[in-house]
Length: 122
Image (cartoon, rainbow, N blue to C red; front, top):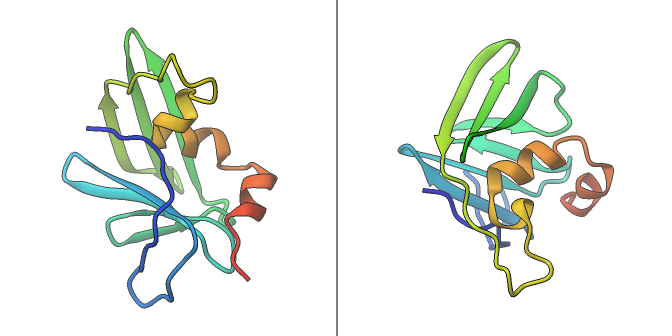
């Protein structure tokens, strides 16, 4: 199951409340992104992957009507999901794959400087 990206108040373990966060539950795991003082941080259950850390990658492949999202760290696969992408809202001119699919957003924004700034708390 995959849902739309939305901002929520979140409290990661041991952290102060953050201004931005997005998460979903996929294949029994919680995956998401939250803002921090060092920029956006992706998490997969207890595994924490700061965007600033170059040791991990997130790739998205669009395959015959379904998507495949893979997260690797130092060449080791941490997470893989084969899923049906959510449909965009034809009546919403701002609706696109990245706004309705967290995995698509992570893969597209992993190295985006503007997103890095927006998801850095002060």
